[in-house]
Image 1 (cartoon, one colour):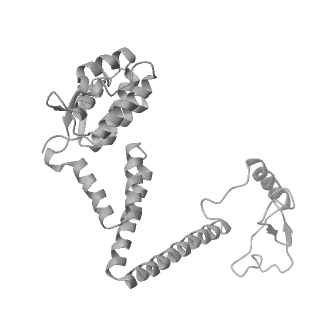
Image 2: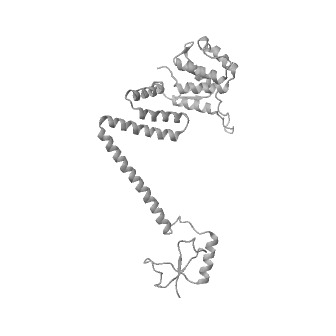
Image 3: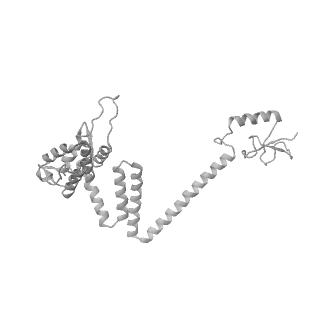
Length: 287
């Protein structure tokens, strides 16, 4: 199986060339490609971006176009690879700064099974895997069986992965598999889909209940003064300590809720220094 680059990889390669060239450089490259290509591209009377858009259109019209026996896609990709900066020569050298177009191009190369080493394009996966062909076949099958919802999520996963947004890509892949399995279950047995929806509803309720239990446990831990309870500011702790030394022994409630020592008429004292900012008053044992 011959080498083949995906469309997104070729488009990213043209974007790299756009950032690296001027009109004269692009015109010289078109002359290398031959009259079958440069006759379809507008002259330098228009902007360089418009001329690059013309080249993208030429590739879309015939993705299998050949230039002197070599695929046009490979010519574009290899020329873009030559514009990528090399790796730092020394460990103490500053890191290489890539433009957004270069970063996108390198990601699309990796998705197609290639990497760039010392300015040379190399495979990182066996050639017989055929990643672009497999991807196109999967999308075609989704269209054939009219699994449009799953296809939409897969497209979004591919787009976010190409942009380097890994978290969003993973989320869209999970949604893609959910939509694919739901659609297949509905084709096999419509009642099965209702059962799956019921199970998901129960799991959602369990998750909500577990979250509420966690909040309740945290509230109990705070009310019981366990480790992690917010402490008073140092100034108020010192004020409470001085008040304790001046007023004599103090005790808190026992397990029954009454003051320790069997006191029945305690005097409630607020050790926080104000009437409203303390929710845990202490009781002074009556003498």
